[in-house]
Image 1 (cartoon, rainbow, N blue to C red):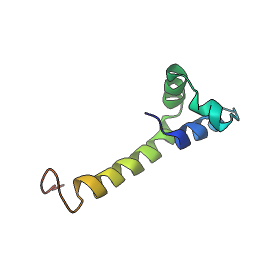
Image 2 (image 1 turned 45 degrees about the horizontal axis):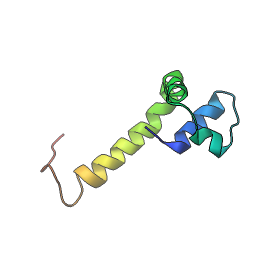
Image 3 (image 1 turned 120 degrees about the vertical axis):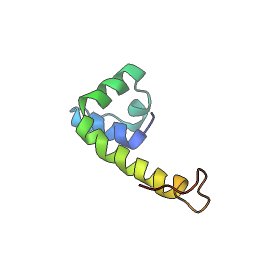
Image 4 (image 1 turned 180 degrees about the horizontal axis):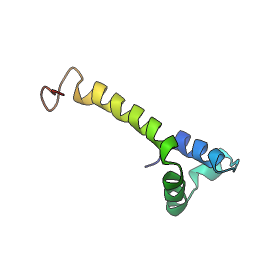
Length: 70
């Protein structure tokens, strides 16, 4: 998962003020540590992006997997 904007927010929550280049260069282990350290902060953007995916792709005009009933 490479969500640059989210990683910037998590770094600030971690008390660091890294440049954009430094955030892009984060190691996989550091990214995973940040993601596991702030699950509540991570939940909202994930939910928002999942809902956008459902609304625009799965339930979009083409309905690639058919009609979805909740």
